Image (cartoon, rainbow, N blue to C red; front, side, top):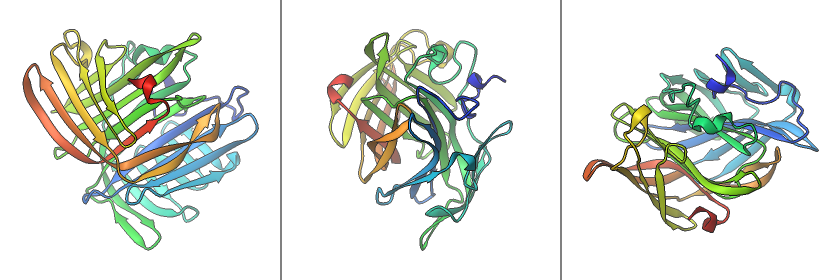
Length: 327
């Protein structure tokens, strides 16, 4: 299968050089049965002055972060089966294995990952925008949710991930958007329920537009909402630590789209946020704030009937850049 239909695999240049700058990062999130959260981000940064592999760590307990850099010769990427290995630390769809050269160590099995549906017309969460060759940043959903087995050790703490839940997504391109909101959670009471939303300032032919994409999995149904599906997003409020918005569907709901009359009402807030490095023209020179211990309050209406309402802990939330561009 072509790479464009396999968001998990490396999407970048075959040789680890790129005159225009390039980055790619995989976001692995782990949540224990007791709602203890941790995320690991293995990636590659091909800058104009320096190129490296890296692993970032964010701890939902206190918002602390770590950035661990590795020379490119310690990066090994496999396409089939997919895996990324950096400095002896291996990430795949089946397992994450961490060696003693990181602030965390351990081995975790990823059980029964849920895959976002792909097709010729929609090769992933970006829809037809995935075919556009000059996008600043591409986004892919690797696993909408899976079970965990194993443990991660951080200092004197053993993080027991047996019966926990996980999630994987990724980004690649040249730079993160200058302004964006991202939120994600799959820590709902019912397994397999999952939600993600990204809203950003998108450069486009010398100008820009406010674009968004996301999905909600409810009762086994994958519901997509985005700029390209015609859904409408109304941002009610953006503050430093919280945001609220409504997404309204359009059309008949074909191919899993949020349909006319249906809507999602979302409010998200964050607690302990940590500083992560983010790409600018391939180099990890920017600083952004992310929390993975936030709370998302989600309501789903079919017509006027409220069919889902829950608050989900251990939610990821980023609010970055000029808020006025996102209203």
